[in-house]
Length: 173
Figure 1 (cartoon, rainbow, N blue to C red):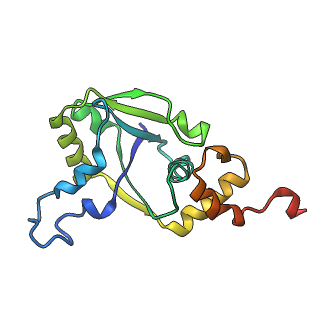
Figure 2 (cartoon, helix red, strand yellow):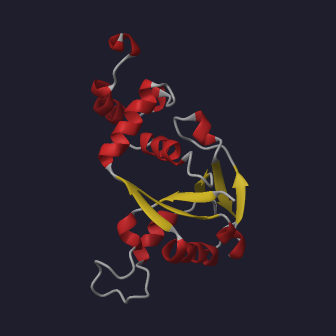
């Protein structure tokens, strides 16, 4: 069963750490900012069981940003959605990588209670990971150079950062 990937801000999901007034078993309200819905839907990506597409998904999502930074995300089992009665609908993603777009989905028909249940799953059962900005930069440069990422879909500020780092195939010969 695939894993669900949702981009988060990792520091918002620690149990009690860094927020002096927060009780050990409380989730800070700011974490819910990572679960903002639109039309009662929430965008996610499907990672295969062996994680073979994880770097490609992270690269595509990072390439959709204005600038390179650390990339935080949560991974949890799709089964957790069934346990909290959240429906997953396959939809086309909006990244500069067409393949990654096919691994996109939306969590649909969300209510406030379901979003809170999802936050609880992420907080208590999800694996929270981070790719450091240095690694993100390497991945994006490689993906643009190999044309895995559609260069025309990148934001200007990001292109200005990675253009000098891209070695053209002609230059390697």
